[in-house]
Image (cartoon, rainbow, N blue to C red; front, side, top):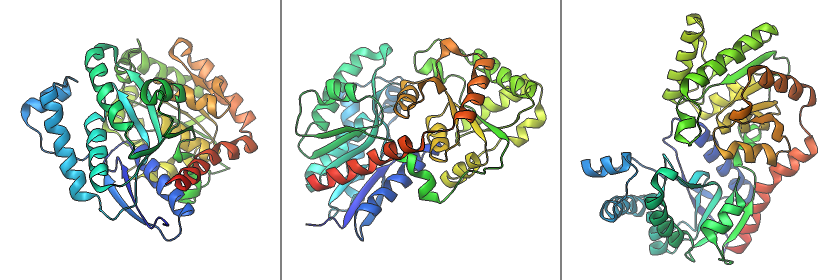
Length: 382
């Protein structure tokens, strides 16, 4: 039976606008591959009313079974109320979903699978980020990992594709389950230029500097302090000025990223720069901002992916393996720099090299096609 209605589950309320870009691009791809399909959008992580003790446990990343079950059931009630029972497919649109660190989606994923089983609607997890355990919470991770493993390996789940760590997906999450379709694919956001009909400004001479919150490295168990990151961005700005290269600061939409950008401006005693920080209010506005750059130096993954989609050379500052995975997949691992090599001159030099080299257009088209081909394949299985 042809699929005429699907439900997309995404992080529609996130202020990190990269998540909205993922959702829009996933919707675009499914509409391209399904004739006259109706799309229902449901928030994967809605704000639900939780008790004080639940909030404390969640903040501490502690998950006693009673707390987990209570919260999970609230998400299930939300999904059962909001997901249309006549939907023929549920698609988790992507993003960093399979993980347990300072953010996790354990209750949501288990609740979603239970709801899908009740409605008998197959589930697809589309180009998700896959991460390992947080060393600080190994006990809870192992317990949660078993619960999530049991949920995602149920027969109602038909496919899980990943944008980064296919080996971790195979070995830790799916193990020997050969019934679930899996594949290494591009993030849907590589299609963002096509989705929004936005192209880069070929006459731009501006380097975009995408900032990220100062404590993101520590949250990902990397010994790199907020003070060190402030000095790094400061030195990047000074290096660009030394080379007489124009630049603008921008963020992906998060308040914490903006607060950090202000700190950088204050540190270098350029208070006038604060009012010039580019702060997008929508996913399309973020893409428009990035399209105005000649090159980009950024830490947020989707600032990098959007730049790539727009054919703008990008240098990534790595705080999570997902950036390194992206660099390797697009064929430019040297453009994604780890903390051991954080040096402003090196970063700006690599930016200038990238501007000279550009991208291999043939390889770019092949990479973009991987996500579209995988959706086409899995739709044939359902």
